[in-house]
Image 1 (cartoon, rainbow, N blue to C red):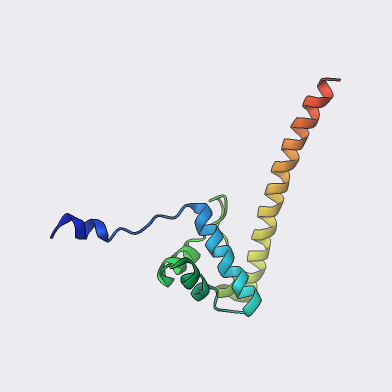
Image 2 (image 1 turned 180 degrees about the vertical axis):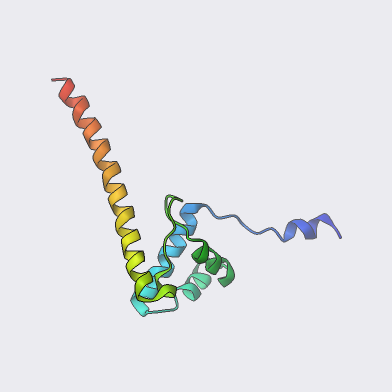
Length: 112
């Protein structure tokens, strides 16, 4: 077996941000149409459906922290968990921004 065949089997590696973007697209299509997000992402991003399914099962988030729940696969409880997860991510981002603004505020206040 030649080394080119062995190396040819290795696929492209996607960053957490790319994975999160693709899964966000899947969730958006599923929310709009009720289903079909995975297939739409397969066509748009030229990925294997198995790759996307693997990402959904493993749970990928934008920050690579806590997993995103695949709401379209988990029924009503999964949808609630996905909504909670989404709110958690939004709150974490808002808290991070608030901390940045407080630091800036304190620095400006100390210059008075």
